[in-house]
Amino acid sequence: MSTPNPNPTYTYRGSIHNHTVHSDGTGTIEEVVAAAARAGLDFLIITDHNTLVDQSQQGWRQGVFTLFDIEVHDPDLEPERNHCLTLNVSEDVSPFARDPQGLIDAVRERGGLTFLAHPIDPPGKLIPECFPWTEWDIEGFTGVELWNFMSEFRPYATSKAKAVVMAYFPQWFTTGPWPEMLAKWDELLQRQPTAAIGGPDAHAQVYHLGPLKRRFLPYDYCYRAVNTHIVTSEPFTHDFDHDRRLLYEALAAGRAWIGYDMLHATEGFEYVGETEKGVTHMGASVSLEDHPTLRVQTPAAGHIKLIRAGSGVVAEAKGRTLRFQPDRPGAYRVEVWKRWWFKPRGWIFSNPIYVR
Ligand SMILES: [Zn+2]
Ligand SMILES: [Zn+2]
Image 1 (cartoon, rainbow, N blue to C red):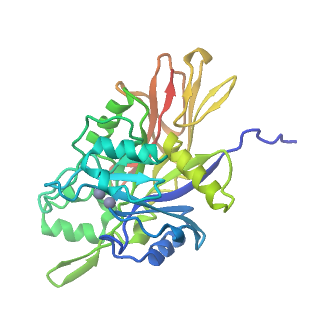
Image 2 (tube, rainbow, N blue to C red):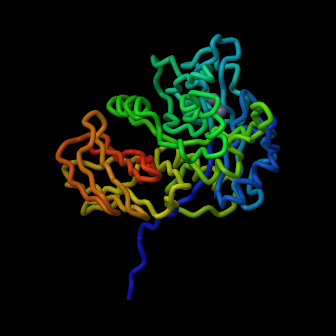
């Protein structure tokens, strides 16, 4: 007879960085929610530029827990940069964007979260506009958007011919977060806990090239691609306040992984620290004195890498499991890569477990 697990966990898949007709996206709220529902997402966070959509419309819509937040930037700054995803806010905080630290503080005072959007954002040959984060003399922000799905494509469009191929077969190009972004995150992790999320930055804009007209990265495509998966200790109950708290608490703590679910569903991924005292999840700390074992389980075979921020790969395995006993403190995070079309592709990026 099996005994019930005393500490069950639940995982939910959702999309965090989304634009609608309320800023420069092309879908109405209803259309965007419908696309999320078709992709089977559990939650959806709309983040229009400097616009807070009427929050009385939040809640469970078409089976998707839908929330409205803001992607904030200073519209007077030339060139435009320093985009910040401000979550769990109930007022328009965009006027604070003039001063990045002031914005972070204002959002935190209001109980909100701040994720630096596409902080490393290289320009492209064909599309030189880019929107990196440049104000690094900041503190108290929640985390970073480690993988911005849309901005990854810009530098790949080195010619018009390539841009056309990309518009029809984006999956041939998708590789993973920028190596510079992963390095930046490791640098931050050596100083303070820093949560990571991934987002599609969905706009679903239509591009024209001669006689060709193509919607690039439609919402349906985005929601099958780069998602953020949260781990919670309680299930969603469809009570608005309860579910909102559960979602934002998981994101704030970094109890989450980023999954490129198009390659293979990442549900079933698990990364925990195990000691005689119990189980530690992503985003939490475990003491070295308790002799933790870091354990990784993936839903399909891949190249699993365990990375200690600042030291690089400390253990790796090809397959579905990896176990490692750390002998020094640090932030330990997991990357899983999978080969597809002649190239390793980033599949899973976990938040770290902090070994103290
Ligand atoms: Zn942005
Ligand atoms: Zn955006």
